[in-house]
Length: 141
Image (cartoon, rainbow, N blue to C red; front, side, top):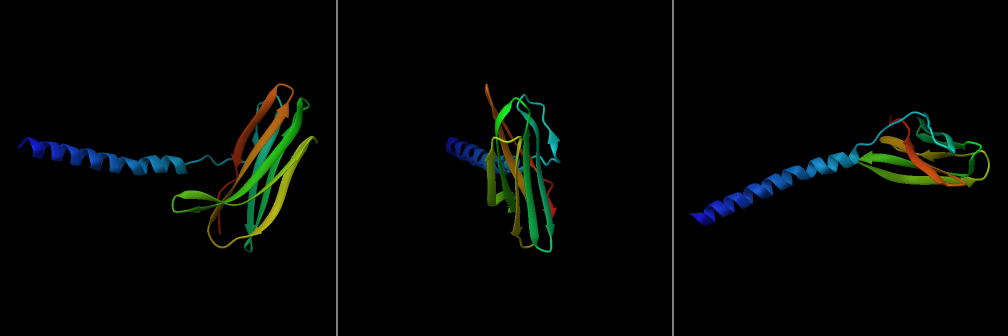
């Protein structure tokens, strides 16, 4: 009798744990989408991420601009495709500069699907580095 209760309790725990796993996976998928943003940092003035798709050609643009206190800028834009609940990296482009701004602009052939661009930026100044990631709007073609 006691062994039936233990087995029943164990089976209930297994069911609860396995049912909660998809919730953890779903939280991984959710990520913000943003238009170009104005960031409020000491070294970073602005960062943006843009995606346009026309005729099966994706145009990817990533941009970061420093303030006068910033010294070095870096931008890396990654074209991502959505599949099976996750965003997968397709291709990345990057540039670093000591100029006032850095940008990447690229074209890439795509098939039908759902895409976005994740643009990571960092700006280094005298006392450290500011960084972040901005996302383009999602485009379905």
